[in-house]
Image 1 (cartoon, rainbow, N blue to C red):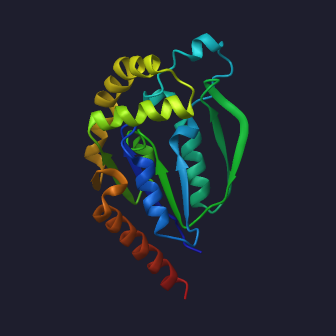
Image 2 (image 1 turned 60 degrees about the horizontal axis):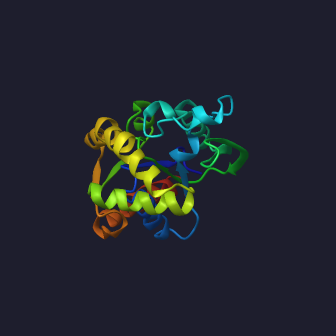
Length: 213
């Protein structure tokens, strides 16, 4: 077994195509060597707050995330220990009682809008990527996702985008692009960038295999 799994950060704005990039990478490896950890699962628990207060949560601010828990889980996975990944309930605006048992793997993809914002997370990454997509494409994707998957209304999504998502993107998300090793325009459709990342993973896995032969 490898001394240390390969950790890849996939950052970018809401609706930028981070998930499609992650899926494109995973599709290159059919032997189940890749584990995906979504930062969205690590929103802070708000069960102690009244529902009305939860509605005011700024989910695009760094303080919305329980990075301490996320970092502790990454450290455990790097030590080849399983973790209990939390589940977030977007309709109740708090953490669910459910958890998902996650087993360590050779490659860990850490995906989220602000995974490059916390230096502690950045320091754990071997490859840092930023998915760079135009704002008009991102808002269309967010509208579709939030209305279909999260039960939001058109007006609420637009209001949230104008008052929270866009300002937070400019203040916190966009600046993290400077920390990326690879900037990926066009998301998962950028096959050249996906090829580069996949090749880097293959090289790392190959070195680990040779080490233990």
